[in-house]
Amino acid sequence: MARKRTVAFSRNAVNLFFHLLTRCNLNCHHCYINPAQHGNQTLPLETVRRWLAAFQARSHETNLVLLGGEPTLHPDLAPIIHLAREMDFGSVTVDTNGYLFNDILERVTPADLDYLSFSLDGPTPTVNDPLRGQGSFQACVDGIRKAVSRGFTTSLIYTVSRANIDHLDRMGPLLEDLGVERFFIQVIGLRGKSAGPPQALGAGSTGQVSREQWMQVVPRVAERIADAGLTVVYPKVFLAPGEAFACAGRVAENYFVFPNGRVYRCPLCEDYPLHSLVFEDDQLSATPKINEADLFELAIPEGCVMNRLVQPGNIDYGPDGQPLYPIACCLLKEEVRRT
Ligand code: SF4
Ligand code: SF4
Image 1: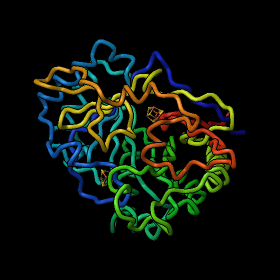
Image 2 (image 1 turned 180 degrees about the vertical axis):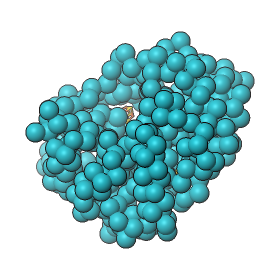
Image 3 (image 1 turned 90 degrees about the vertical axis):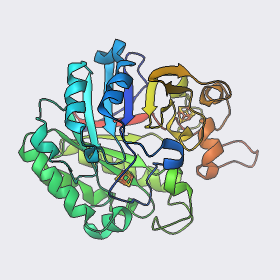
Image 4 (image 1 turned 90 degrees about the horizontal axis):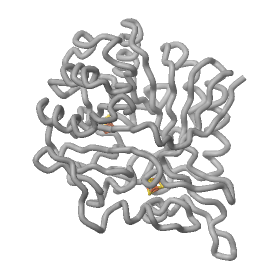
């Protein structure tokens, strides 16, 4: 039987999401990368070394996620992964779209990487490819099979939108067939391209699903897939009325590093120059006010302040003008696994 628990923010763990470049071979409809805000650079190996060193004091407590753009397009991804191991990061993950460029699986071993995490947005090419690009389903599935056959531990990320929520329950058999161990369900946010004009994300303007759709589909599918033996993680998104709210920017340590040197503590701030930290001359320092940290201090009945500012369409209000439920921090997750 699957058992669910809310993964509270941990004071003892640090999560470091390190974007090595913003370039990608795909052009996904919901891509949150915003080169105008995040830069076009491919960070040289030596810069990556110096920036990682800024987090080395607690590296053994830090989960490092290397991502892009598409990180396997970085010609030095393999030495960067080796460097991360030498620097004793607590875990090292690479998030890839599955094309696995630069023969990356020939250049690293399962001992070098804790997780290789793939992204797929549908159980078939018919569902996935209109969202992520022609041929991307097959490329990703081939990449997963190759990685699993070589002994890598794999995860898969599925970004839920109106275009694919009705197909989420068909992911279970595919994940089992592929040998994927962890399944991350993500929710589409109004960031990057999905904050722009609507594309193929379903009827309506944004692709965002309603609270009713989310609550009816996601927890049930997560439990079913967990019953098959996978660990399933999804964002809580909607708190129950009166449920305690906490902002990860205040109580946890998450860093989102971009190639232009901006370092955010909150993903929902990434379309704006609100970063609270910055690398200048390879030194990490605080930015002047006003920045995201000032927003973390605001207490509103809607819960997450940035959600209220950038995607208020997911909040419903009662006749008294009060929100019917608060929106959770986007970093608060539910984890479901078989017990
Ligand atoms: S694979 Fe990732 S980085 Fe590339 S376009 Fe898609 S969402 Fe963006
Ligand atoms: S998503 Fe909202 S609650 Fe979470 S860190 Fe950002 S502002 Fe805080």
